[in-house]
Image (cartoon, rainbow, N blue to C red; front, side):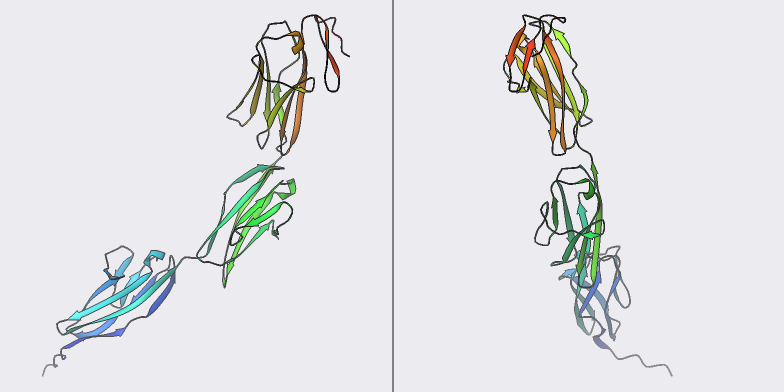
Length: 313
């Protein structure tokens, strides 16, 4: 005597879920198992849209398996089952949480003594987190040259960096039982301006064009000024100052005199200044002509007629 055929019946949900939580990157299974005869068919919807086949999603005999979950997988999932005798459905919600992550920018910090350094810590995976800044393992608090700004203290601004301020800077984030951190290395160089090359002492004749050059290196880029016998150079039709920045990051400043006169003779000085320090270079330019004495703020300089009868007062 053969076994009796099972009675026909509408589907009934045996196993389902109300909600599931997962961290991004994890595997999660959304259970959905139903009874019924004939064996029911299954269909999944996400946010009321039929599920599209995806290499990360796989329907199994026990539910829907999702590999390498993403925050975009969060939403409402519906498991529909049916056969010739009826239908049933199960509704559950999946929440995929992004792991707590801290990222400091910029990633590379190379600056100079005396400069300003600003760091920003971007946090994902939570809100209202507790954020702290550390330098070489010691906590950083706001002070005379240190500012910590932002809703969550995510911005660190430091003025007038000293040599001892270099090192490893860490952003540490804590939320409940989760924590994350990131760090960058801040390298501080001696950015004091240095004269790489410059003009030399010379004797010129009236009317002869003269070009004086100062090539300076420093971080931040130095500002270069020119003086004659300690008086600022006045730019006019005959006296022009220009500068370029080389591919190596040097500042090259030029003082061009198109129609040199006896009064243009004297001690020329180029001064390079930035937040790390100051450096100067000077040399004498002699202009042939009748010996004259011109007064300046601190000294008297003569302009020479020839190379042998120069006099200074």
